[in-house]
Length: 283
Ligand code: SF4
Ligand code: SF4
Image 1 (cartoon, rainbow, N blue to C red):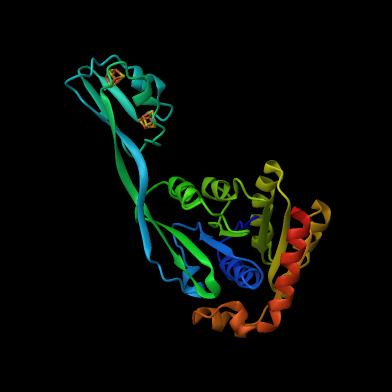
Image 2: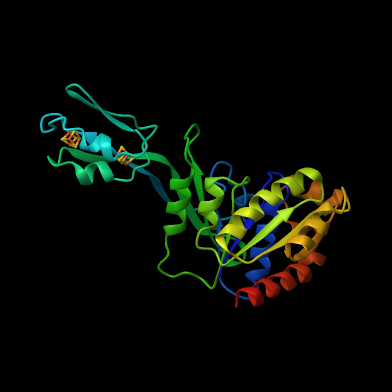
């Protein structure tokens, strides 16, 4: 079962929730935790993995052999991203536009295109606390595309998938979030009861509605703001599965690198109950 923890907005406590869910799930089943927030992965701070495996990832960029290229232009015609162009007796590749789809190499009648790996980041994995099988993607600074790294992370070591996989999604509601959600069985949305929280919740809830996936909401910092998130969830038929109260002690503990369940172990049963509800919905 693949559960994605997402939030339209950064700073809502998404990683706090995702790691807490992994910790309670690991009491019952073997768990894989995947930090798909590849621009700023930080779940490892709370799960303390021993990262003993590493792999470079990226996309395959075309390279042109000008001694065999006839400058026919077929590669430029097939490229949807305008990442290749034939100008007179030159075939030019623009790596920053290339998505590594391989179409140009497929259509080249002269086999003049080879491919080289353009490294965009690394995948890292290793055992974390409570035997959680931990993996994360780390994107190189300045890279424009997170999606290829997330895609490779999801494919990595799929030979023996554990019963529960928890993915910590990037913030926002754009392509990296969609890629993280793709293939999931359930999406848990973390929000806060403020106008900003509601605005971003609506955006990501719309994506999930279009993908037709079951979902539920967890309200973090409950007690601040207003009832608009509750009203939106009621109108949209999205269940609110749990609330985490606004508590200064939680904020301070997390800032010091402690997991939520270390700071507030009394929240453990509520997380277990939420996990049971998710399992029930999916099954
Ligand atoms: S399709 Fe092949 S031969 Fe034609 S321009 Fe591109 S690289 Fe050259
Ligand atoms: S690999 Fe795909 S995106 Fe890149 S240049 Fe070739 S056709 Fe364009």
